[in-house]
Image 1 (cartoon, one colour):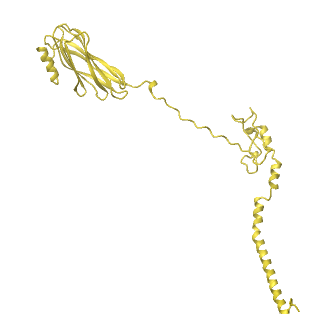
Image 2 (cartoon, helix red, strand yellow):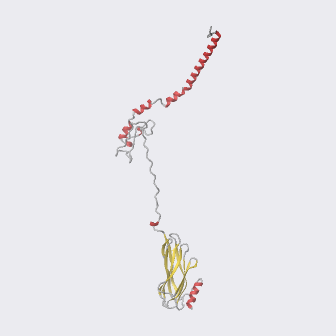
Image 3 (cartoon, one colour):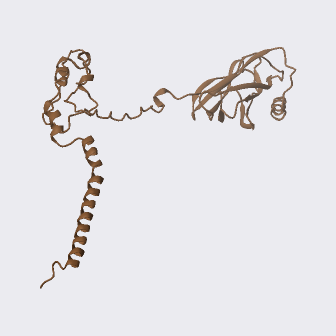
Length: 297
């Protein structure tokens, strides 16, 4: 009856009596790490229990409900207690464990039971498992004073690197092709690369042709230090065929412009000539009519 009253009082009352006896014990709950969504089981123990032995215990375990969630309890092995009650929904963020034993003998280190928690928080979040001893007594009804409370801690681990999504490098677009200036309309033009090992040689051969007058690649802008002696010699030799070809094709743009400027004057002179001829013709006809020129006898 005494044991039942002690246990009942511990379950119903928010706090147990703080007037502990002279003997001491250690109450401890385990710690651990668990992955996101995984579960872990921690042990609830009372250690260094003096004689005649543990008769009743009511202990609260407070946790952070945003990090872990209790999913169940199991009693300790070996039948150390006659009856155990574990309420994972005792209060928000609180699990209450209660156990009783009617006969002496439960002394020393006693495993009361185990509590399973599941991770519901984000990686690297932790929850303290804070102990609050409501009641602790021996089989004679004397209170046992806990000398020390060893609270636990549960932490959610970050996934290992092998489970993290691999970072993909952005696709590299193909480099645009290099355009090489060539001599338009000159079938005799050839490309010459700088000799390997010559001054100014690059990873890709430099290509040179015979530039025209309006080409941006002027032969006189190249030097021996940049294109090599062979390319300089070929580029410096201006093609007389290319120079004379332009003059043989017809008048230059400036000459065409000058010739076009005389066109209005030529048209005006022709109009004046035609008008003068018509005027002479009319005058001649009238003179002839007055003289009878052209009449038949």
